[in-house]
Length: 65
Image (cartoon, rainbow, N blue to C red; front, top):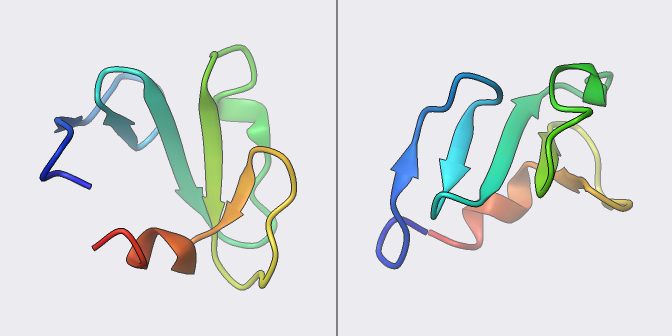
């Protein structure tokens, strides 16, 4: 992901990709409370097989390596 985009650590969330996509990483029970009002925000959660909406499995980020 960092080959084509700048990855930074924003004030809210864990990673900001390309100055646009905000990613918050957490466990299966993680909710959107930290990033609820932020546009283009996603949860990357562990211990889930399938994503729904802006909630994606953490393992999918490994496919971008």
